Figure 1 (cartoon, rainbow, N blue to C red):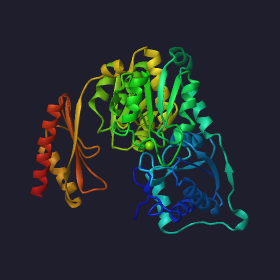
Figure 2 (figure 1 turned 90 degrees about the vertical axis):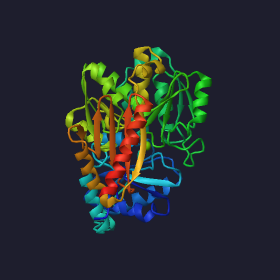
Figure 3 (figure 1 turned 120 degrees about the vertical axis):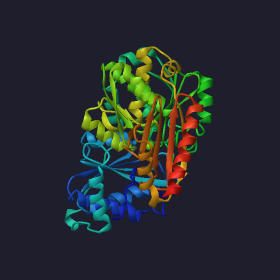
Figure 4 (figure 1 turned 60 degrees about the horizontal axis):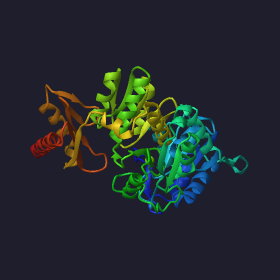
Length: 453
Ligand code: MG
């Protein structure tokens, strides 16, 4: 069957593959999936195409008899929280997250605020491709209601789950870079309410992303890093375009990679609860596991993908989870990546420990990772993985997602790409030299295996 939804919903270039026909079709499919009942919360990031796609999507929803609740521009986690707290019984987010401005995307949210599971997505795909739309007669068309409360509702939800008193006492100076994304409507007010002195940057939501590209990489954040150093801010918070992710810069102006901030948050969460399960994909650094183990933390590894991590957290009652790209999931709030909550919880960690971020990060175990790729025709992918597993018989091998071979204080992960004829090869060890060696050896090994098939 044809697929609509990838791991990040539907993404495409505006008015090419991401056009109003697609958006209205999804609207009709979603409304039909809901049986023309209930109401769908619809929100967007600030992209230039958001009103165009939203209007088409809502038209499709209304045609089936379902109602639409327009919450306007809001971070993805704020839209998810709106669904969870009963603004509607389903959600659709129009966002392309960190992609360049010519892109946009559509993502579906289940009644509990989590990203829609694959089975339900397939149901929507069947309706869409089979054109099995259940449109209603004139007197049963749905209604559109605007609800501007999603952002405030989200801010209040986060504040209710923070130690506000401790944070206020710490009087932290926070540089906040909203990357011209949706968080301009939430994070400045959130951090200010928490008693931080907030200096905001690129805080006006604007779909052309004039400040910098909305993926928070060190390269895109060169200006932000310079400003952070000059200001001597205790903490710099950077969100991606739809603010489901947060990257931090320490008080010395050092960019903190997402695996470090994830490990730190996992450690502090496990410490505060005297143990607990934390969840992350197999590609996450060993520093995550090393950080939580001394405090009674246990790690569950999953396939790559935030919704997969979130589902595993629900199933196993985890206390924390997330990915190495700055996506953190706080189960006491909601089961999705949450940039606002990550920012609030990080200021809470600084306030409660009384330590500087650079000190906290330095206290984590250090590892070096090397990422590379090997070309492999799709037809050979499965056979090559099998041979790789055979080659490493006797070693600790994990086949949760691709093949991960674990050594003492090191591992290699070989994952077939779902979209390209390549394998991604990750290698991690205690030093860069060891990681490089491990990477090169295994790259060669896989190339030999592929040739032999
Ligand atoms: Mg995002």
